[in-house]
Length: 187
View 1: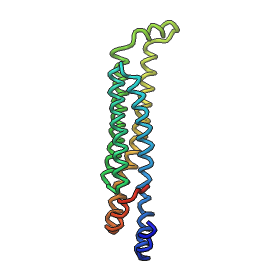
View 2 (view 1 turned 180 degrees about the vertical axis):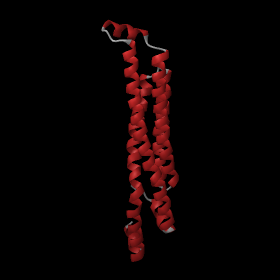
View 3 (view 1 turned 135 degrees about the vertical axis):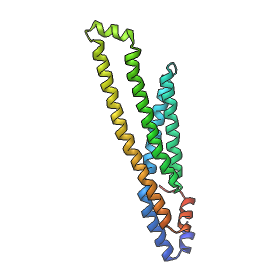
View 4 (view 1 turned 60 degrees about the horizontal axis):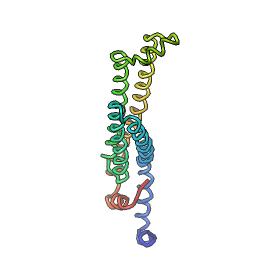
């Protein structure tokens, strides 16, 4: 790289430095995607491992694994200065939100339609009414739905804003700079 830098003109060096600063406005999303990918992937593995006997947990875990994979794929695309990467990451967050909301709604439905008799009997021994359990279940899952809509919704918005920034960057950056940046790892 030293030889290449010495062969660049002052204007080219300034163009590269400027491009690097402007790229920082969207490349920070690669770090967010890395954290999201690893954390969702770990939870997916745990959910699958503990849910091998539960079809619901297995579907949830597999869905989370797909979301984790998409986080890493979108991150790679974004590192290659491809606006489709940020778009994938935004859609992926909407997918994760949908998965969580569907799981919560299914759990609320099961509480009313298929109540666990053993748990009801145990709670009756300590004086807790089934209606109280249903109310608490709905409250907890409603809280999870709200938290997911906020967290994944804001994360999706964050990524979708990066789509516009990458597109603006590509429009205003010389092709030779973009090609050079694509040949090296940007973070």
